[in-house]
Length: 301
Image (cartoon, rainbow, N blue to C red; front, side, top):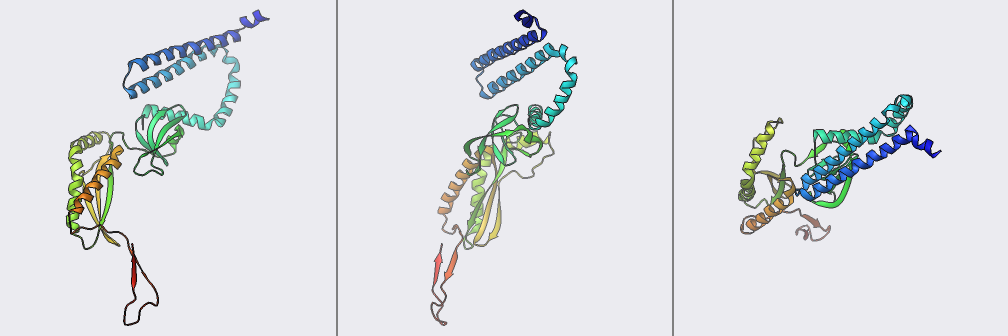
């Protein structure tokens, strides 16, 4: 009985398949260990490890197919029926694999990029066969700071959701800071001060931004007429709103905003004719006072 089993073609094919799996992954494991010891750059190390794992998987699948291909003719009908059923049942996993292939070859994003897919925003930390792992930013945390949560987003979403890449190609974004001064303030001087502060940071990155725009224009239909900071003026209910619009690196939005706001506070504090405005409302108590004398009013801030 044992001799018949061991001499069976099916048994031998199973043994060869298991052996192919073990040998392929032992080789892949050894290569990954060498990569971990020799490659210092974290991103390159991650990419090489992933590439090795993918190649090992493909080789293993191809070898197993070759081992079993002789029996393929006898099970063609069964495979056709099972294939149709599996396609229906595994619609989502198949879509995720197709999405993974799109990400792999078209590269709308890669590890290290800051992206948004649908309502999920964050830094890509891993791309696997079925899902992309994202270190979340935003949500209940302001100014694109990390929440500390890792979100696993199915790769199939690349077909159904818009993908926003903050850092690919052009890693700068436009940010705006709104400052409101009173109507009595010298708003023109306040506007000049804000523009002067906003222009300081641009002097450091102006050349880099122009080079990036020029590089992107060779690939995309993109053109910016004005890249320098600008301050827009608007009249609101309680004062004059001055909005500073400036370019900054995607990951430095909060730090640059903090530095600019501190500079504005310091500069405005030295100007006696500039005051910040804020919403106020007044409460009048009915019946107080006489018709000749206006009622007392209580002002609440």
